[in-house]
Figure 1 (cartoon, rainbow, N blue to C red):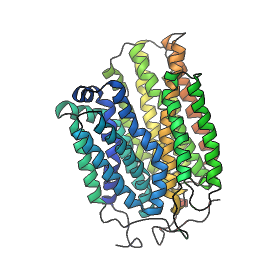
Figure 2: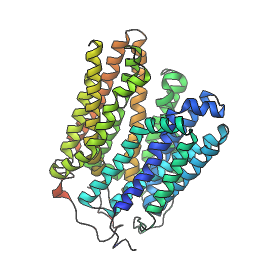
Figure 3: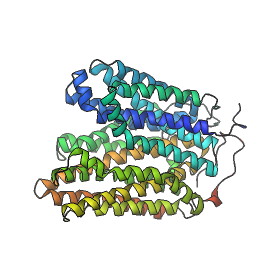
Figure 4: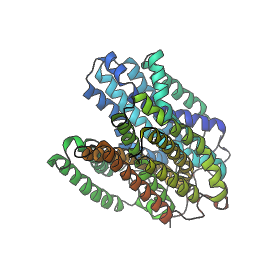
Length: 478
C-alpha cells in the first residue's frame, strides 16, 4: 500500500501504544523490583543501580540521533529496530544469571526507547491529520503516562506472583504484538535532494556534553557541588554545548540537530515548557520523603497519597485533547500548568497539622495530575504540528529529550535543596524549600507558554488539510 493512499488506523495506534509501553511500563518496572532482582542475581546494590540508570542514560543520549535517523532512513524501520532491540534486551534480562547480561539488556532497552519514542510520534504525524492526529497523540500520551503511572503496581504484582523475569516476558510479547500490528503500515521518510551523511563529529561532541551533564545532575550531590570533578564536568557541559552549537550551525546539509527548528516559536515554547514541567517531578521525591521522615508515613501510605495523580492524569489526557480542539493548544497548556503549579504549591504548607496536611497533599497530587493531563496532548501536538514533515522525527527526539533531562534535572535539584536545608534546619523547612523550587519550575514553564505559544496554535481553525503524500516537506520555518 502506498503512502499516498494509506490513512492511519486504530490498529496503527494500538501497535504504537504497545511499542511505547514496552519502555514506560515494563523497562521502567526495574526501579520497583530492586530487592527481588538483587536477591535472585546476587549482585551488589551499586552494580544494580548502574544497570537501572543505564536505560534512561542511553535513551537520553541517542533519542535525538534516532529521531534524525527515522526521518532519513524511515520511521517504520527505526520503530521496528527499536522493537527488535526491546525483544533482545528483555530476553537478556530473562536469561540473566549475573551482572553482565543484566547490564547489556538494560543498555539495549535504552536504545530501544530512543528509537521507538520519536519514530512513533513521527509516524502519527505522517499518517494522521488534524483532530485524528490529536486523538492518536492522546493515546500515545496515555501509553506513556499510563505506563509510567502503573508500573509500580503492575511490576510489583507480576514480580510477587509470577517472578520478576515475567515482567520482561510480557515486554517481549507486547513488542512482537506491536510489530505485527504495524506490519501493513507503509514506510515514511523525509524527501531530500542530497545524499545522507551521518554526523559522527556532532554525535561525539553531543554524547560527551550530555554524558557530562547527566553525571553532574545525578551525581553532583554525592560528589559535592564544589568538588573539582563536578566543576570540571560542568565546564565540559558549557564548553561542549558551545562547540556543539557552532559545529552544527556550520554543517548545512545533515546536522545532528537542526537549530533552525527553534526559530519556530510554538515549537520552542512547547519544548521549553515541557522541560520545566517535567522538572516539577522533583515534587514527588520531596513530598514522598517528607511524609515518611516528617510525618511517619510508610512507603505504601505515601504511595497511596499520590494515587489521585495517576487517576487524574489519565482521565484528563483526552479532555485536554477535546479542549484543544475547541479553543486551541495555548489555553489548556496554560490552564494545565496553573493547576500543576497550585497543586505543587499547596504541598509546601508543612505547618498544617497531620490530618489537614494529609488532605492537602492528596488534593495537591490530584491537581498535579489534572494539570499534566490537560497539558500533555496540546503540548505534544504543538511540537509535532509546528515541525516540518522532513524533520518531525528529529524534532520529536528533541522534545522527548527535554522530558528526560527535565525530569532528571528537577529530581536532582529538588533532592539536593531538600538535603542541604535539612542539614541545618527542620525537615518541614526543607520540604517547603524543595517545594518552592518546583513552584519556580512551573512558573518558568508558564512564562514560556505565554511568551512563545500563540493563541491560535492547535485549534480547529489551524488544522491543515491532509497532505497528498506522507513524506512531503514543509516550507522553511519562519
